[in-house]
Length: 174
Ligand code: ADP
Ligand code: MN
Image (cartoon, rainbow, N blue to C red; front, side, top):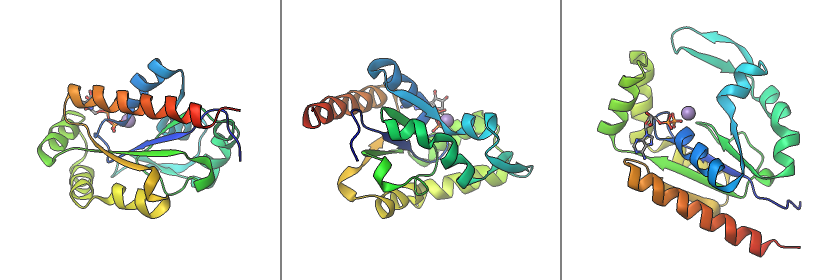
C-alpha cells in the first residue's frame, strides 16, 4: 500500500503523556491527531458506559470503521491506550510512552481515577503490558519505547519523531 504520509500510533498506559505528545507533534508537523477517546464518544463506537471504570465500553469494529478512510489516506497520529486492534498495514511507527510508578500515580490521582482503574493502570505500566502488546502486534523495528517523565523528555521525544517523519518522507518520495 502506498501512502504519501505515514501513520503513527502513540500508545501507552493512561497518564503516560499520549495526548500531550500528539498535540505537540500535530502542531509541529501538520499531521492529524486522531484522539480515539473522542472518536469513541462522538461517533458512538461503544456499547455503553462502564460505571465502575468510568469509561466507554469500546466497540472495536465500529471504531475501525469510523477511522478507516481517514487513516488509509495517511498522515495520522493515533492516540490510544491500545494498539493491537489496528491492522499492521495501516501503521508505520508505534511509539510506546513509559513513566515510573510514582509519576504515574501522581498523574492519575490528579485525574481522580477510581481506585480500581488507578491500580490496574499502575500494574499495567509495571508489567509493560502496552510495550508487549506493541511488540506482538507489529514488526519490532517499528516499535519505539520512550520515557515521558518530564518536559525535556517530551521535547526530545517529539524532536525524534519529527526527524523520523522527515526521513520517512525522503525514503518514500515518489
Ligand atoms: P495520556 O493521554 O497518555 O493519558 P496526557 O498527555 O493526558 O496522558 O498526560 C497526563 C498528564 O501528565 C497531563 O497533566 C500532562 O500535562 C502530564 N504529562 C504528560 N507527559 C508529560 C511529560 N513528559 N512531562 C511532564 N508532564 C507530562
Ligand atoms: Mn489522552
